[in-house]
Length: 138
Image (cartoon, helix red, strand yellow):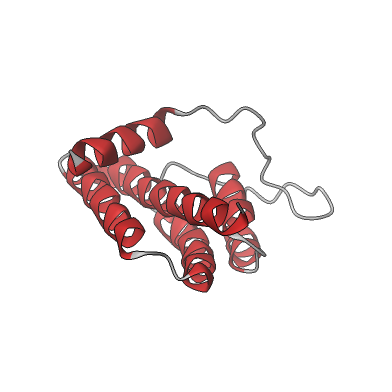
């Protein structure tokens, strides 16, 4: 049952269209899509998981570069999650979701699969951060 919930969560996360897509720009509105070092640094310095994920998704290349970009955002989300001291059940759900990401995309191989896997992992941790954050707020 838990694996089915995790699978559904991963599918929903992967299929959800971005309603208000952010552009790959810096604080001044300059296009930074062709400056990976710049946008990766901005992602790393994001104040929260949501901001990091939004910028990482906006600056996606659909190549192996995305692995590092998504990892930068993942690190921000991981730091946010650690502040909340999530319960074991949420940590277990994250592990299950990430295992599904890895298993699904490992079978495909190639550059796009690496990119998709990285963003799937990022979506999974972002989902858990939002879940834990809502429990802290309400």
